[in-house]
Image (cartoon, rainbow, N blue to C red):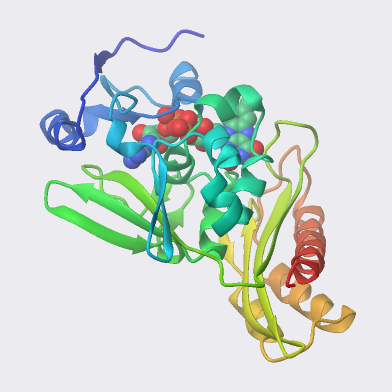
Length: 287
Ligand SMILES: Cc1cc2nc3c(=O)[nH]c(=O)nc-3n(C[C@H](O)[C@H](O)[C@H](O)COP(=O)(O)OP(=O)(O)OC[C@H]3O[C@@H](n4cnc5c(N)ncnc54)[C@H](O)[C@@H]3O)c2cc1C
């Protein structure tokens, strides 16, 4: 299908993009990789009169270190995450998980910022960002603010970001030594969204869990942080029993929609399985 007609704008700076957003109001949409927005326009679910293309703003691309934090420009594409030596050394979960997103064509154009800003519970970056304790930098006419990933996702396609703001950076704390990690994703076929997936970041000190983050993809209207599951692990050794308890607590917060990927019971059960697998893999990497 052909999308409805729109005017095209290609600013060269974040300031110019924010000015355009303010001037054009709710008739305008930001364009990043286009792999979520353009399908929605073709289906006429979105009919913006103006597209503001962020692709010519160099300042929004790239991966750099800022002290103990890794800073990722919102327009950085999935393949750049996968190829990044900084991420491989400092936040390997992100590089590894990006390989599980969509297919090579989508990963060439799709951006981490677009994946997060879209607010789709099926997208993988929201849960990964929550597990990583990431912070999102939002820039708008009133200035810049930072929002924790855990408080950013309000509902399906609804986020903390205002209509006149741009997501400019994703800031992620570098892993402490001996941090274990995993993103376990069940999908029907290559390139599919998750039936259910779990992101885990884990540290074990003296045989007991000292840090646990568990977040879930596509089993509720937003990505979920499984806080009760995390709390159930803290201070305890990781065993079949504690892993099963954490998985049960993660399943208890699932509220998936039934669709072609499965019914509610199946998706909830698969979320539990993904938590078990991710915890076991992360534990093996805590060395
Ligand atoms: C076949 C296929 C399979 C896919 N499979 C997966 C998958 O398995 N996992 C997954 O996570 N995703 C998947 N996707 C989605 C893909 O990752 C998209 O690229 C992503 O959801 C959106 O990123 P984008 O850069 O393409 O953004 P766009 O489509 O350009 O934009 C998406 C939305 O975000 C807004 N936006 C974009 N950038 C910003 C910004 N910097 N600040 C504020 N708002 C912004 C836009 O205005 C728009 O509303 C798939 C897509 C396709 C086509």
